[in-house]
Length: 128
Image (cartoon, rainbow, N blue to C red; front, side):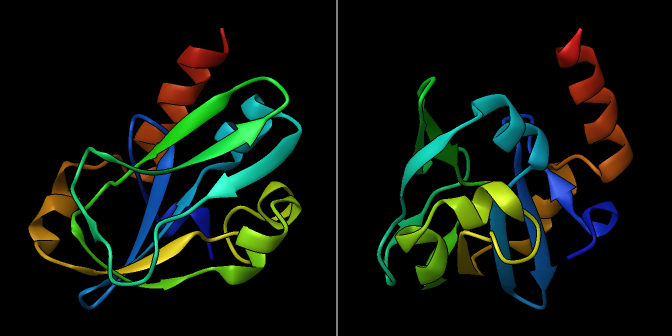
């Protein structure tokens, strides 16, 4: 997945929308900030995500961080590979390390997210 085509949240989740199906993940910046990932907790297929609310968490040696839903909808698929081996997320957060796919309730909510350039500016500010 090409990060320049994704939308991002201020809390470092990313979204790729294909019709009414959104693939969700977390950015490389977030993975790098967390450092050594230990485990990830993802929702079950059929769960309903609410925009802006936690849908899981990722644990590293430094902290446990909530994962926030950038869009609302029903979980239709989880990445079992990442659930079983969180190092996949650490190594490739944009392609093999996606987290869940949801059937989006309201695709217009995507308009409120950051594009790649705006997200890069935000993380550059955070890095200082």
